[in-house]
Length: 394
Image (cartoon, rainbow, N blue to C red; front, side):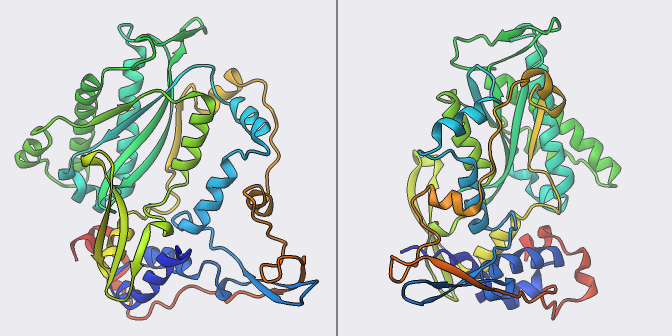
């Protein structure tokens, strides 16, 4: 059976090393994950009205890097079978009546060092260059000649927890002309834009922005780096169109609330090593197993912590907020579901006693949390500027 707190236990086992090698922001994130749904965050005490069994339910950390919390957020976005018609209709009200395409922009591994040292700046650059590339192709009369739009989601990991920054783009198959008329994309729905052309334009825009950034930061764009960036074509991957509104909604729910790794992928763990499953994309998506040193697992996990308050989901063009009033005038209001309603819709009766299976849980009292930041023992002032780039090289 999968341990629902496997990652929290792994973090606990490596806590001394974390305090020695991570910066304060990383420590706070990892501390939130390890304390999630434990007495230290507080909670509530319930009692069964049939058997009298006491039940403790502890609060979640709500950290966006926590696999437990993000799983609940994902379920909240997905329509259930019981509310499928209402859920799909509500979300369809903000989907255009066209095919949606999935395009992925990636950067070469030669840039990983710069990305790790300047996460906020480089992730922003990745978003900006990907959108400018799509926007340029959208306005090109050869392909479409309209204002298009996209929703982008930043991911930084491969399935084996390697560092692999890329953005997933969901692009409607059409756009709005200068005359405010909708125009469908060409290509009979098989593709939106040619990926080889996208790759060349994206690389050109990114390298130009990179040169300006390095110059402004007092760094040099070397001939060696230039040779590495132009040694191979950059990968821009285009998938087939989604299968209707339900496919788009399921994709958004799955990818927008995804973390670097989830608890159900952990097969075995102890103080020395962690074994987990992963998908090998280079070999037809084969399911494989990898074993890492426990600290190496935590080190890789830390690489994927986003900068504080960084927005990883962004909307551009006709999917941006300023266009919504024009394109989505009629909306079906959707009632927000509580966490109880979310899990009851999945068949889990949260108010039923798990011991006798018959009684109903009655709330008795609130459990107060242990407030305050984590204990930063062994943390020196020299670590104030310590970044994930440093931990990557440790």
